Length: 366
Image (cartoon, rainbow, N blue to C red):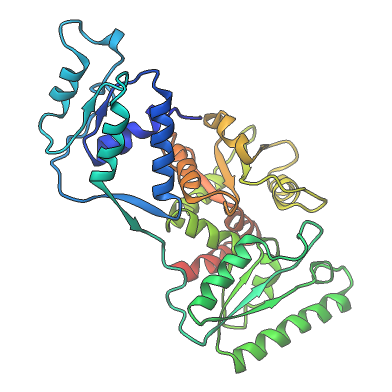
């Protein structure tokens, strides 16, 4: 599924700004273009045209072919001009020529500008309101820092004068078979929650996805909105396209015996006993469909680009906090193009608990 520079960029420019150039062995130009492209969108920005153009959408069949495939009686640049001639602004150049590098880079700088496009994050929250962050640390939790989703959300809210309250739930006690131990942990949790509602204008609770079953059940009568860190990151990293991940839940419902799914994580952290991606989600899938009924594969870090994604009926992706928006959205676009459904850790864990739980965690984004 890994795409070449040519394959990735072709549709971007054909659909947004008429931009024609020829395939060649000019790797240096590709590298410099990729470097410029990455810098421009590294922080959630996108390219936007500075002026209106009469753009001509170029289909695959019309797009410029290598020299060996072009009619000898018509040069490549003539073909560019023919295909793009109705557009007001385009570049046709031969990348085999030395001066093409400057032409391409200048063209990009002259015709695109940066526009910051970050999705709203809980726009309903007001100054001096409070958000409860449930962070049940486990064996995989690193010392001396919060995980990136937790730190990201806390910084975002504090910058807006929205207070945060960090709380550590004891999952072992919360899931204990001893009812007295479980009740004691529930009382501890609800005491803090109700105190924040009464005295600190509590508006939202965000939990680690692996605790959504407990948080959902324990807050059913508390009139508090809930969601998960993973879902927040999917919302942010996809530029607000949570509906796309929600559609993946329907694909999950339609899975049949013998189907394969891929669980994808953007990072390569050390995985221990109760890891969400390699243990908890696969175990819940097995419990629902039966042992061996669904083939569950994994991709960690850069392995995603090496997978034959078309063999999978569904991709279950983490929040993507360890890669940038460009890479996350490139993955999403590859899956859309291949018509492969996508969902998220937080959504699948919420759905596997109950449909009501899924509806609640999506509520703050509606």
